[in-house]
Image 1 (cartoon, one colour):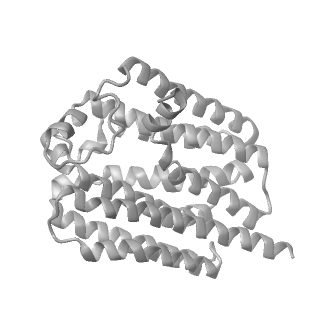
Image 2 (tube, rainbow, N blue to C red):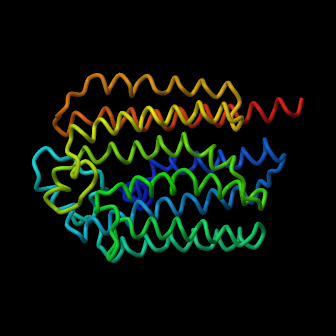
Length: 308
C-alpha cells in the first residue's frame, strides 16, 4: 500500500467523525446562540482536533504494543484486536510509528497556539487537558485506562464530548457557557458507548495482559448491563437537551438512530463469543454518527430559521 493508505490505516482515520461531530456542534452552538461564526478559526479548530484525535489513536496503539496488549490479543483465542496491528506484525518500525505520532501532536499544538492568540488562553488549557488524557490513558506511570475504575469512560466523555464542544464554542465566542457543556452530553455519551463496547471484543486478552477495563473487572454479564444503561442515558441526555432549549425540538429525530443498536442488544445473551460483539460495535458507531448528524442538521435548520 502507498504511504497515504498506510497512514490512514495506522491512524484509524475512518473513526474521525467521533471527534469532528462535537467540534461542529460547538461551532454551530456559537452560531445559533451568539450569532457568531469565524470560518477560518473553525477550519484551524478542525485541523487541530483531527490531529489530536489521530495522535490519541496512535499513542494508544504505541503503548498497547509496548505493554504487551497487542501480543496478548494475537495469542488469545477468539479475541478481536481493535488496534491497527502494524506494530505487532512488524509492518512499520516502532521509531517510525512514534515519529508520525508525535508529528500529529505537533500539528495539534501549533493549531492550539494559533487559536489561543485570537480567542484566548483557555484554548491551550482545553488542549492541554485533552493531550494529558490521551497520553496517560495508556502511558506509564498513570495508565488510568488499565485500572478498571471508570476513569477511562470519564476520560472519553471529556475528550470526545465536553472538551471539543466547549473548546470549539470558546474559539468562536471567547466565552465559557453551560450550554455547550449540556449540548456535548448526548454525542459524548454515545462516543463513550463506542469505546466501552469495543472492550468486549478483546476483554479476555486484556485480562491476560493485566489491562483492567470495566469489562474485565465486572465480568461480561454486568458490563453488558452497564452498556445498555449507557445507551439509554445517551438518548435521555438528548431529551434533556431539548427540554433545556440547547437543541430545537426536531433534534428528537436523532432518537431514531437508537433503533439499530437496540435490536442488536435484543440478540445478545448474558455471555457471548467476541465476534458476537462486532454487530454491537458497528451499531454503536452508526448510532453516534447518524445521531450526531441529525443533531448538527437541527442546529443548522435553527440557524436558518432565525435569519428568515
